[in-house]
Length: 161
Length: 299
Image 1: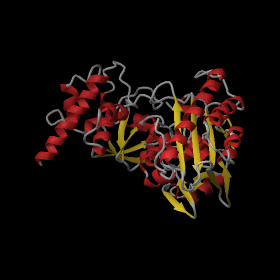
Image 2: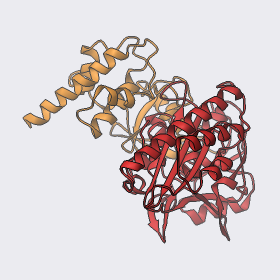
Image 3: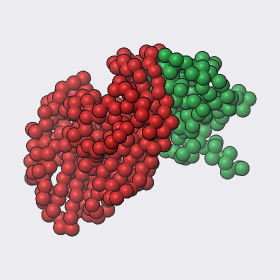
Image 4: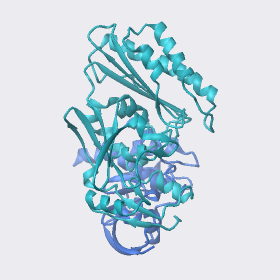
């Protein structure tokens, strides 16, 4: 097995890393200290490792780092800051959608993918959009509420612009 | 941690085919949603993988000489939103809506779903009733195999080790065709099918004439067409009596398997019920809207 130098563009920062082919994008991101990306089931069932890869939300446990060479990667931490959170991050906190917090990063990325396509989703559409993300605290009601709150806020913000 | 392997990273299809030609032990990797899970579980231990998911030549959906042609690396999410698929492959589009989960759909490819050879591949029953063919390409040749001959057993296909699945194609449906897909899973998302079924009904101007195709997934070692029931229904008319007989025949003629998700006896009962329900709905729907292709029954 031979290592190779690749480039990962994460949350607007460029990283040059030398990795073996069997390293997943999830492992590479966590090694680069993007620990908001969580390692859950490692088989694409739980969505805890969800990130955006070139604009599409995917499970980073099922992508090899080499496959993401040169790609644009966005994690939950790249959406906002403590001072200026993304409306989804704010809504998750306000709605009590964060219990243990393990699923939150992936949930927020899946919800963002939904709102990017559909700014005013129904409850059914929200539940469908997060159907690849498991919350083992089973706090789904608050999570759905949070996504609705964020959608409303984002629509208001757009209306004001 | 994944086990060790070498990873080939071709930039073009010819380069990929050249690499495939050099060794018969290279395993194609596209979306990775099944293969990487198997690697992690040590279910398969390939020494060398080739990354083909990013190849431009394997992307895109087009209509060409009376066929719909889908590149093998087109993702399930792409198919879900594609206007050509909405028009010419509505039964397949229904399956994309219940395929795994939204995150997996953004990576999983149509070619990978078939080439993996799972009996429960959800794209297979819709493509079987579309009479789809699989395009296989190696360095010096190209061939097309009917899908019903492509998957030969559990995780076995007729793909030669030096070949790549490069496209899936099916003839454009005649006017007056409607299809329906139904997945029976233990939950809505992330479920491996207990049973999946696709039915295609084609009617000519007269209500008495009908051609029916039925395919089942996750009931046998491979996804299958239910030929005896199709023959019984062929020519029409689709009376409640003949539909009931065909549903019974579909169940009797299928050698259903028992596994962790359901017993053979259960699957046989479900086949009867679903063939009857879906055919009845399609037949009634087409009486009212005979020529409206987009009017399938949505389950």
